[in-house]
Image (cartoon, rainbow, N blue to C red; front, top):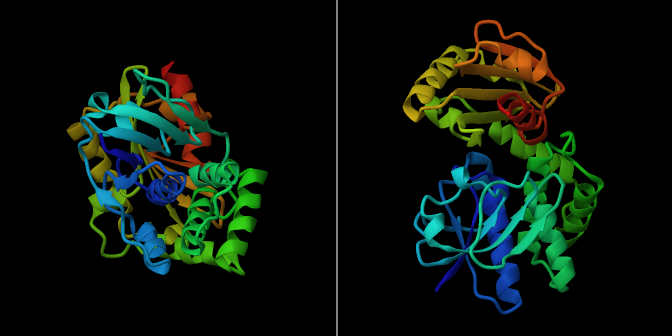
Length: 306
């Protein structure tokens, strides 16, 4: 049996970097593990890989008969399609506990922090393993991305302390400046196919038997969407029909204004009123102060569907 570590479908920087960092750690303590991915790196993730001289992990979608560590989620909806035919060895995550189950005891590191790579940094410390300079740099970038340069309500003191430690290892003098570089890469949306934008950071959730898709695009200025917002909204309608979803939401997040414009299509016209006490007009609503899908969108929707 070969052991792999893989993040969620449509992987973000935390999933890709987490797989690389976790695999290095496991191999360093004598447990062979191969880093893998379920999709292509986003532009931001490719920027991180290129900056620190790494190739993307192995692209692999089938894990039947393999041992699997899961990073950055614990949901069947986001896992490999044949995860039930694999041996689940462990979960390393910073989200709510999902619905993955195992037939054997497994290793679990789940912490209420802003990024999975913060948890993995804790694992390196626990095992007394030195982090290579280039991996430390990528882990720092993943944390800066997930915490929106420390602005997200998910950000904790642990995330900030881990960034400080990783910056020292990687010789990075200005972590926030590097974080802004990444978000400028994210903000370059011109010429990108609409469906690629909608699915760039997109997750499906099973909410009490209802499939709800939630995407997020984080930029430094929402004006980059002015010419394509109608096309984005139209594609949400198509995506809802194609996937048999109850609702599809897309957060257009302005990290400077610290809020998100929500585009949505749903079987429930009052969804935003129930979740955030805000009425959507023509499938749009402004959510002031909302930066985190994990903390400010998913729990509120789950409460509605419960």
